[in-house]
Length: 569
Image (cartoon, rainbow, N blue to C red; front, top):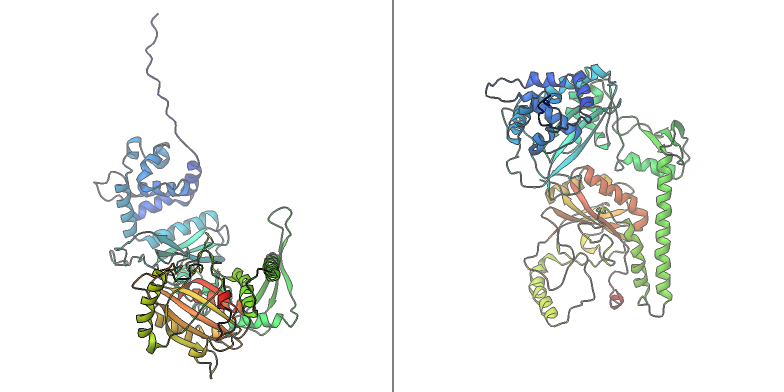
């Protein structure tokens, strides 16, 4: 008996993974049919249907998020039938073909495609659309993107990749603004669009809400968004068209300060509104209490409800305890230096200035690395030396000083023991005063102010120093210089970019062309005024005027004296 001929055995492994589950839900939505409707295979030269290629890309993004150039390699690991392909079709999924299909997707009626997809999902899964949540964020790009200028393509505008208020704290990189709305029921995305990178959040709400009204088919859903919605045009638009909204009152609004001042002296009756179990074993339950605004509606005419969270209360208390402990440790350390026979702090002025080191913990914002664009690390620099030069004397001053300082260091007569954290020359742009009869700006360093705060900002794309000063005189005035403000005057400056390097290391440079400095002279101690300065810094960013690079407090010594200068270290 002859043995039967045996063919070589070939073992092929194919992945299933989550793809059958993803296909199940996409089939229920009918996504492939919707894409095919808007991207028909209307060209006989096409090897693969556009809808099939986009369908593979959707599944890739859902499961694995592989780059386009690796799409064929990724798909080859699966049974091609799961994508509606044959084995030979998979090899055709190159990045060039995928790119052309994405071009077709861009040129089609994408708004209607998204609307059909969302409505299909809403019907199939019975998604409740009574409450919708909106937010926006930036997507940062590395590179020039010189062609992404917002030019029109096929009668459709394109978003411009450009500089703006970067939420990744990278003002040196370009970006796009992405606006997303999800349902409260399951956090299902229901609307999405991309805006120019320099688009502020505030004006996006009106077109977003109008789009949602068309999608939902009625205006009475509850629209929930962050504090950027709290602007009169957006709220009035929603209200006048029969809509409802919930937003957060910004810390910069005067209603916020009024309520904080009130609860400091008058007891408020809180009512428990919601209670839910703790997220983790061993943690306390979360309780939310509310109280209506005691002075009535906002200046815009809308109801204000104050909310107190037990979790935030505990977190704030812990943060205060940590700051107090840190301050006590700094004071104890200072006391040890004072009693030491080797102490170099012999005068009251030097002691007051050294004690100010404990204020470094208030500086913000801090990059993940612990640095800031102005001081590296953020707690670098213990003493602030500020001097004014009369404009009429600037040319003569620097004609002499810039040469002399190089001569001194060349002769070994420089003060090498001093470490500069940030030494930069600035030109004053404007003075903004709180009082009708103010302290003149040129006397600010002679007046016995209780404190000083320096706020370094990087202006948003297209915002000039004139625009910044106009905002400080306009919308920003109530925030920083309004009634009861501890800030007496704000001096606005722009850095001078040096044309030659100094003979010593001067710390961080002047920043880019969009850097500005705001010096805030305070009537109150820095600790007492800090919440106000935090709110002012937040208002600058909320207005889209600039990003705060550093806000730092300083306690003054005795102006006009130099008796302790040899004791500084």
